[in-house]
Amino acid sequence: MEIFHVKGQSKLSSIYVGEHLKNLENYLPSGQTIIITDENIKKYYQKDFPDVPVITIGTGEGIKTLATVETILKELIYYSCDRSSFIVGIGGGIVCDITGFVASTFLRGINFGFVSTSLLSQVDASVGGKNGVNLDAYKNMVGVFNQPEFVICDIDLLSTLPKKEISNGLAEIVKHALISDKDLFKFLEKHKHNALRLDNDTIFKLVATSVKIKSQVVQQDEKEAGERRKLNFGHTIGHAIEKFEMAEHGRAVAMGMVAAARFSQAKHLIHQEDVFRITQLLNDLNLPTILDYPAKEIINAVEKDKKKQGNDLFYVFLEQIGKARVEKISFNDMNDFIISIFK
Image (cartoon, rainbow, N blue to C red):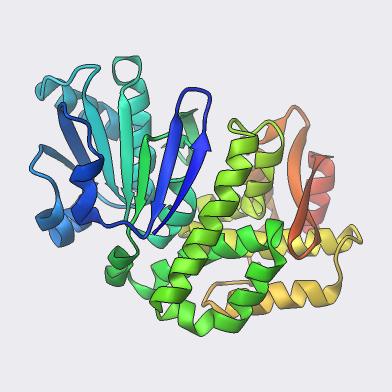
């Protein structure tokens, strides 16, 4: 097991990579605990839950809404929860996002923790203190920054994931490699087949290294005022594709990273061979790389991006594999680039 820490403004968050769901009770406070999970996780793993009340939600991006939040809040009232109560989200990114948002808003905030059950969640959604829900078609438009008390990343839970979900999680690991760690990128190139078949040593290294990268970035910039913006590499166009096609997050981000790499090349920051290596690795990880979408639809979605400031937005470019930088660019520049690569 490896342990990482994020010191937020209000608390210290501890991330336990390699710990197990069955040991969750060791991390709970002495008072009342409520679990929030989804139908799939409950079906597979409820036998390993502590004996506490469980609130069960549906699955899929469509339930990540304020209506779901309202339903959960009413159940917390039903269970007579108060400010000393503790909430644990057991699930993937959607469960973690909803749980963190609910806990941060119920009675103006109670403590919470996560047991992360998907690869995407372990390397992304559960780490860093971003909690939120969607508003209509706009992703994570309502949310807060608030750190969980703990995150348990149980590698063993990944065995029940569909193959597509493994690839989705690997997309975010590629992102961490591209913005911060060229050696991690080389490791992925060399061990891609082991990663896809969930070889334990390979996955443990990938999750631990990703959590280390993200926790260090968040430690420097908890509320995304500077350095943390680099974690959005591939997400500007990725979120647009996710909204337009209702694609899974990792698959959309993969295409967004291809676009960002090509934009970086157009800015004479990286070379064509770098774009080829990035595209090839994503293909080898069973992720899409073809940008076959209407430019107008992508532009419309990008204009709703949370990172915009007036007529500008913050965009993450690559200086090289393993090093990123953030620039403020105009929407006109962004739109011209989108038109140049989309049909």
